[in-house]
Length: 217
Image (spheres, rainbow, N blue to C red):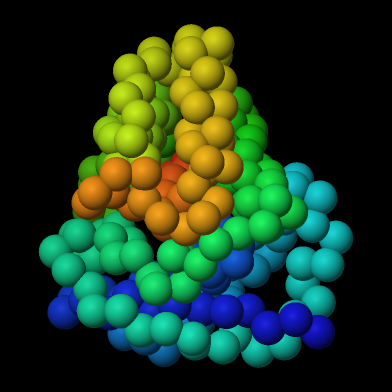
C-alpha cells in the first residue's frame, strides 16, 4: 500500500488539497477537512486518468498523508491552487518526469473525451451561470498559453478546433517539464515543472468534471 502525499494550500476563504504525486488530483473546500474529503471523494473519477496513463497500481494506497501546509493567497481564495509546495522543487529522475508527463497528457485526454461527448449548451450552474462547452475549452487553452511564460516560453493561444496547434502547444509544455526535471524554475519568478504540471492538470480536469456535471443526462 502506497501513501498519498497531500499538500494543503490554506487561504482565508478556501483550502486546496493536492495529491502531490498525481497531477490533477486536487480539490477544494472551505476548510482542510472538507478539502481532504473532497479529494478522497474524487478518487474514482481520477482513476480514469490514472488508467489512461497506464498506472495499474492506482487505488492500492494507504491513507492520505498531509506532508506540507502552505499559506494561500488571493489566487487560492479566488478558486485556483496558486502556491508552489516546497516538495515541488525536488529534482526528478527520468522515470519520474516521464510518469508526470504521462499523467498530464492523460488529464488532457480526459478533457478532450468529455468535450467530445458533451453538448455545446450546458446546464446552468446553481446560480444560473457558467460557461458553455466551447467557451470553457477556449478558457482552458487561454490559461495554458498564459501560464507558459512561467516556464520560460511563449505560446500563442490556439483556436479550439485547431488540433495541430493544440497538440504543438502541449508538446512544448511537456518538453519544458522534462527540461525542468532539476526542480528549478526556468526563469526568475517562474514556476517549477512539478507545480506547473499540477496547475495545468488541475485546470484541465476541473473543467472536464464541471462539463460532466453540467451535461444533461
